Length: 225
Image 1 (cartoon, one colour):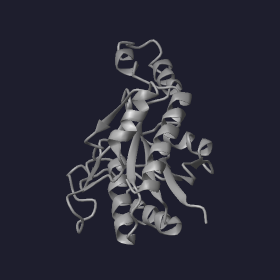
Image 2 (image 1 turned 45 degrees about the vertical axis):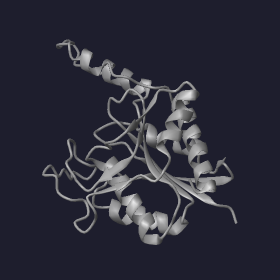
Image 3 (image 1 turned 60 degrees about the vertical axis):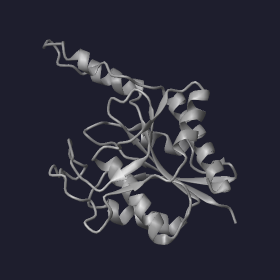
Image 4 (image 1 turned 90 degrees about the vertical axis):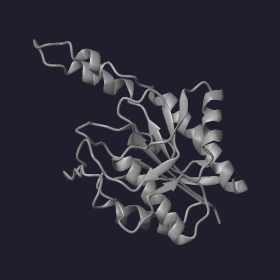
C-alpha cells in the first residue's frame, strides 16, 4: 500500500486574486517524493471551517506527513515555520469576514503552543544549498496560517500519527507585485509605489523550493526523523 503525504495550500485571501500556495498544488499533486505519494488539497481561509475541515482531511488519509503552504504578505524568502500558537489576532478578515483581534484562543482546551515536528534545519539547509533564499521562522503569525499549523498538529496527535508536520510560508509571485504597482490610483499620488514594490519569487523557484522541502520531509518520514 502506497504511503500518502498530505499537502494543503491556502486559497486567495485579503482581496487577492490568487495565492501561490494554491497555484502550486496541481504541480505536485500525485507526485512521489521519497517513495511517498503526495495528495494536494486547497484549503478555505475560514476560521469557522478550519477546525472541522483539516482534522477530517487528516483522518481520511492518515498521512505519513502533513505540510501546509501559505502566503506571507511581503516576505522576501521561503520561511520554514517551527511553532503554532493558540492565539487569534487577525490584521485582515478571513474570507467569511471573521476578524478576531483580541488574542483569544483558537482552541480553549488546547495547549498554549504546539511545535512543528519536521526537521526545519534540514529543510533550510537543503534550500540554501540549492541556491534558494530560506530561513527558519519562530512565528507563523496569529492569522490563518498559524491556525492551520496549530490545528494540524493537534489533529495528528489526536489520531496517534507519528509523521512530520510543518508549515511553509511563500513570498509573493512577481505578477502579484506587478499588479500592485500597475493598480496604483491613476493620476493620484504615486508615492505609495514605494510600499507596493515588494519582494517576490518566481513560480518556478517556489515550485523548486516546495519540491526540495517535500523531498526532505519525505526522507524524514521514512527514517522517523
